[in-house]
Every structure is written in structure tokens, then in C-alpha cells.
Image 1 (cartoon, rainbow over the protein chains, first blue to last red):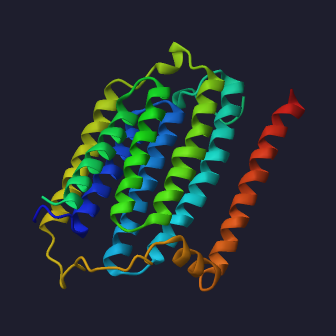
Image 2: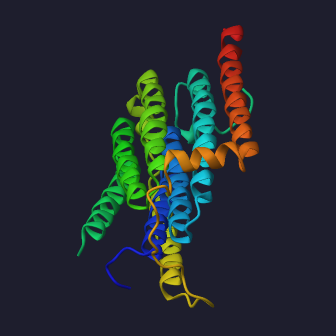
Length: 103
Length: 171
């Protein structure tokens, strides 16, 4: 591989970003930080879409990443609302404290 | 090393450093700021890829709207030291498993033998990735997904309002 960024460089960068997000989900216990790690993984997918779009010369990947952004915005709004509700009930955002469905 | 290579590696390092910051910072506020840094550098990568509309949307939607929402919720909860309690031994296991999985995929990507060849860099016009082109696609061929995006956002808004009112009625 040469130094000039080609498609595989972008894919490798997206892979690294995805796995950092995955490690965040696996290791952290704070629900908000877990949400941020999920955003990292979604952005890794976006980077792949845009990179393939550039190298295939078609704008469809941009539209896909636009849709990913829409879904991510909704997911964050609803998810954070749920986290706020849990915090009001349990006074904690630690996912280990959310271990029963009814109380 | 040309300007494009230089900015690719510069933004790439900032993206990965910001992402690592999100994962390792113990204070969620620092994590959020780190995530903003990561998103801005990703917007830079999108500009390098001629995706100007996506880069602008990235800054507006992610670094703007979504991160403000995150920071609002963090401030609202005013995290106590009890919330900072993290997993001890299982976190190490998480790093190990995630790292091993990453190494496996990385090696597989580098050593992969493809039947054909990867698409290589070709020149694109300034029209590529512009708001004009994306808008033309969204309002003609991809009108149905675009309208669906509006419905998804509406469902999200209604869902959040219902969740907010649910608590008020009980309390």
C-alpha cells in the first residue's frame, strides 16, 4: 500500500473507528457514554458509505449516510428521553443498576 | 506526500484520538467534547472525499444538534461519583475481546485477495457531492426514502413527547 489515501485506507480508518466504538460499548457502564460509542459506530458506517461513493463515482452513498444521520438523530432523542426517565426512577445512569423490568 | 495525504492522516489521527477519548475519559462531559472533536475531523475527511453536503450535515446535525442534546442531558443529570463506578475486570475483558476482534478484521482486510481490483481514484467534477446534486437526487429518484425520513423524524418527536408526558402524569 502506498501513502496516497486510497479506498482501503478509508475502510481501515472506518474499521478502527467502529472497533473503538465497540470497545466503548463493551467496557463502559455509563449509559450516556454507551450511546456516544454507538454514535461512533454509526459514523464509521457513514465513512464507509461516503468513501465507496467517492471511489465508485456515484452519489448514492451520500444519500445513505443522510438516512443514517436521520435515524441517529431520532435514536438519540428517544434514547436520551428513556435515559432521563430511568434516571428519575433510579437516580443513576449506570446500566448495571437497570437490572429489573418492574419495581 | 501531497496535501491530500497530509490532511487524510491528520484528520485520521484526530478522528481516532477523539474516539479513544470518548471511550477512556471518566467524566461524560469530557467524552462529549472529545466526540465533537471526532465529528469535526470526520467532516474534514468527508470534504477530502468530495462529500461537501455530507460534511456540512455532519457539522450541523452531529456536532451541532446531537451533541447539544447529549450535553443537555449530562448537565441535567449532574452525575454523582456513584455513577462513575465502572466495571473493573470485565472492562479488561472487553478491551481484550474488542482488540482481538479488531486485529482479526484488520489482518483480514489487509491480506484479502479480491477477485477483481478495488475501484481506484478517478477525477470527479465539482458537481459531485454538492447540495445541488444531492438535492436533485433526493427530490426525484429517492423521493420516497426522503419522505420516509420525515416520517421517522415525526415518529421520534411524538415518541419523545409521549415519554416526557408519561412522567408528568404519574408524578
